[in-house]
Image (cartoon, rainbow, N blue to C red; front, side):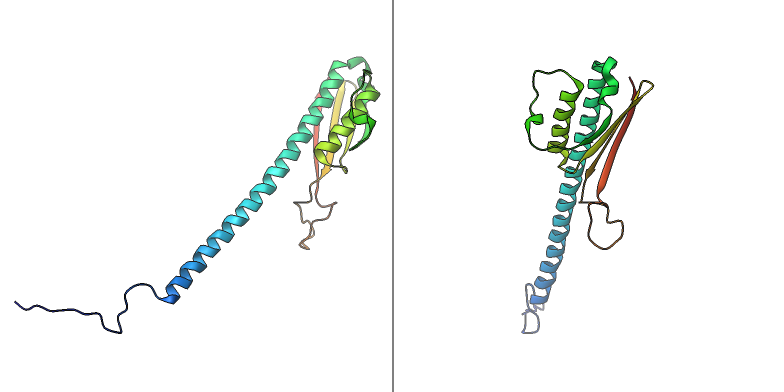
Length: 162
């Protein structure tokens, strides 16, 4: 029997070379960058969905208030601008459309920001609530790489018969 002894010479190194390690680190780094981008997009989607949910809840709250006070439902119609502070943020003992309007404006400001606006229309038993707020995380319409307030406006509208 012939026994051969194999030895690793200088030309045959065992283990990893520096180039292999660098390529592995590069692949790992690209994967982690992709994961970071995924997390960033997830936060964007979550914040945007939260604002849309807040706008939906505010619109239905206004419609419910109009349903509860059908005789004076037309008094809720008008333009609303978000308020973030002041006496209107706290409900008082008054149960009137004017008192509710100021409380609702404050709630809209706290939920959607100071730039939020709304319009409420009421005609022939049909109520329409439309809420617009700024969501600057989206809509680079002109493709310049930045999103302006005008590009980032979102609107939620709902129509119902009272």
